[in-house]
Image 1: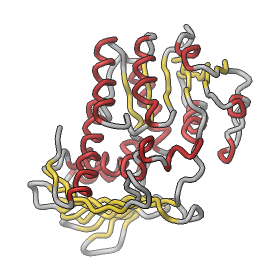
Image 2: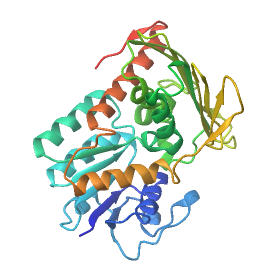
Image 3: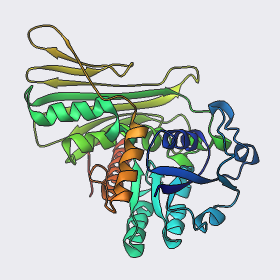
Length: 332
């Protein structure tokens, strides 16, 4: 029997998840919920339309949570709603898939972990980069040691100013945490996934409005000799194209992912080699993985919720480093 999903929140990510589920086997979207009447008609504004004729459509989240046909609640709401909606879903007896960042802060994220244990339900946090084909392949290559040890690693993620969000919530520091928590967290999480917890971080950042960071550069300090840096920015013109890239220097060559997501290895000697990666994207990879975990009644071994909680702690350390203008020890 197919796993039956209810999606709460029909913005960009809600539509992305809805569309992705249509590609997967063993899962069916049976309900959606949004406070916006236009979206409940399937009009997702600049992100297109979705056909909601075959699903139940709710305006109140409690009604969806009480729907006996919903097995899993997929939360794609603004960040401040992640923790309270997750906890309500557990109380209603549902498993939860929740978009990143896990919560607005580590206190709320910890409450989500405690609630999952209390109600004995599964919690999956959608850190899609851990599933993105080129990143997955890069991790595989590095862990294999076939090209030697890592010397340096640089990750970049830049975007035009996200002025398209519902009631412009992304530009509210109190709601989104702005670039550091909402955008840069992708690379911070992948750094942890690739290299483990850093001893400390040293970050520089600039804020275009009070209360948040819109451009951040972090040096992740490890006891090992490699040097790891990640940069995130979203203060550019709204027409500026989004891009995510990385360059990793290894003892025997350099591994690079360019803006077109192509992965290339440049050996110290010889010609560059294009590295084949799996088809699809991180959204498809993560949701397929989560559904398989639910079917097998197990936690994720790729992104356990405790890992997502530690990534929140890491981001908070980076923000503190920007404030203090000095290195900060990473908790967790």
